[in-house]
Length: 236
Image 1: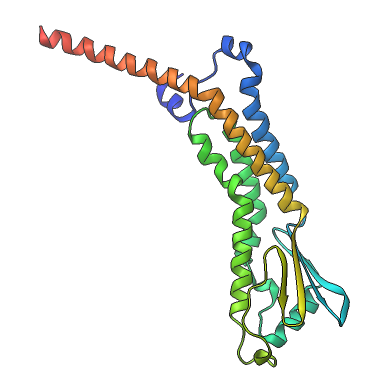
Image 2: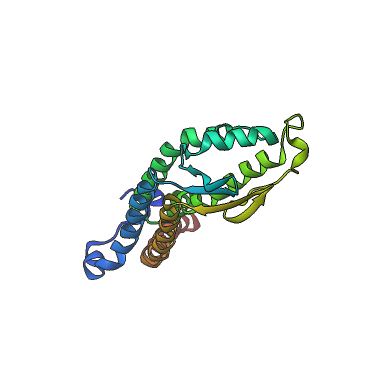
């Protein structure tokens, strides 16, 4: 294989080596592919849910967040938020929701590409999917804090409640409401995908680092040999 291509995609597996240790080289591919499938399966599932409990709402009011939309008692919660000066929920994370599905498909594609890359470039390809669940929670926290800390001072009940930050996960309190926030099945699957990626990276390093080291040693030896052949006639 051309040296430039090999530097980009990493050394190929010699047939004799692949035949002798098939599982070693299949494991990274298996875990990256499993992560891609798991991540894509999360697209249509809820990522987050928050329920508001109060005496006047015995069944509670709930909002369920997907990567690209929200469902549940959104209208009722927006009406309550209006009185305390909070903006409608639909105004949050508009850009993120617009690109979420295509972004997850891109992450899955990068994971598949990572199965044929046998060097450190693989890390750059799979890290976005690895960090996605954490980034989702951080982005969610940002919007919850932004909305809760920037209340309209001219709202009818603005003086009745202080600025607040609803919890991303767990139990909190907003005025007379108790809030319970939890991860949805989609976020759980995305987190599983991150775990599969981490394991895949471990197996990837174990399988391909020796091949890469050997290839670099051969390349360096070849360079030194060519350099020696150039220097000898000059010295003579």
